[in-house]
Image 1: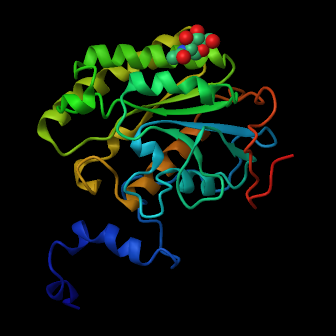
Image 2 (image 1 turned 180 degrees about the vertical axis):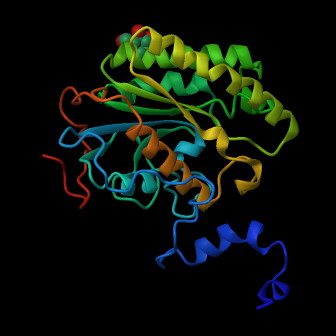
Image 3 (image 1 turned 60 degrees about the vertical axis):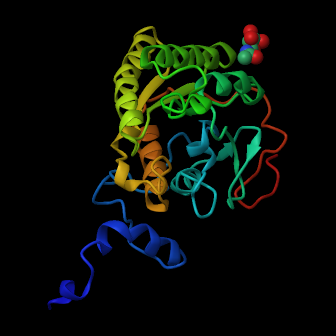
Length: 274
Ligand SMILES: *[C@@H]1O[C@H](CO)[C@@H](O)[C@H](O)[C@H]1NC(C)=O
């Protein structure tokens, strides 16, 4: 077989996402296996029978911008969590999935996200998936708003983490290092920012808070569609990463969510959660 001679050499690296987009209804093998081996089978319960009330909190990547179905990482994660009772929290809807609630603020910085977060935190999530800082590192001041200094941005992120714990003390915070980006200046900023994220986690974990580091910086610039946003396969990879990180949490960290489900709370079939 000299099949490869008939394919442009770039097919494998450039067109995989396009091919997947065109064939999403087919049962393809998991395209992420090679880059992020799954160690926990989908559908393995994380906390069942305890409900997972999950707040995806962040920017356009949380919203799912540039994802063909608009779900971003959230649908893959939701499907991975088929062994759990999952209710998505947040005040924004995006994507084709039934329970498409989230708190992803497209184009916004950590400060803006923090200004909006209380509206979702009152829903008392017991898991917060926090990924923010990409816009803070953007060299365009119209986007980065508060400036691109990594240390200052990390301080804002730490404040947002503390805001989450102030509002929902019993929650688990999964704090992400952010994906790499294409622009050289923004990438340099991103590396400086990411270097500061682990100590935000370790300082608080050492103080007994339920916070864990999730490394989304495994996402490389060639996995993006526009230099910033992941391609479809990579969004799925991110869902799998969150899933594995949930399984890696220490036993007993996830407490039953406090208070009633959000008014919008949905079962997997779209009916209201009782
Ligand atoms: C969030 O709520 C807390 C408690 O009510 C309050 O102290 C804080 O100022 C609020 N944050 C924002 C950004 O609204």
